[in-house]
Length: 118
Image (tube, rainbow, N blue to C red; front, side, top):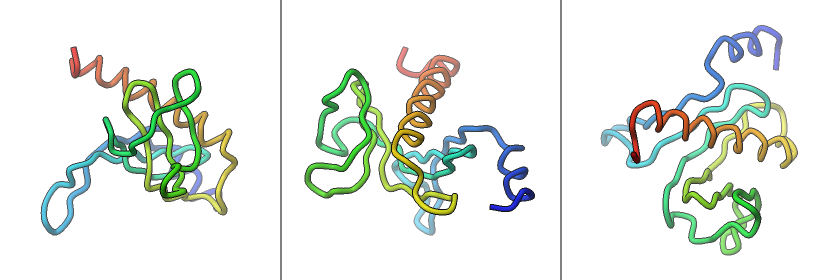
């Protein structure tokens, strides 16, 4: 990625949350854009959309046991799937998981700010 493109991403908020608008209207699910390395867009899911439970303390990144797709799951029933990585090549899983853990903290802070789930 060029320095100019990198600076454009760095001028944006680190986490951008939102719903997509398609020809048929708003998508049912929410999306996350992460604008720092590792840059990615992914679908946010809540509840049983992925049909698996984390085996570690509170979050896990790995292959879905049935589909093999990369999923991030948490013990608070919020996770990420359907990834598009924006940097050259797929980043290492430790960097992805770290960004996801920070995104969940941002998600919870946002929900507290807007009084969601209170």
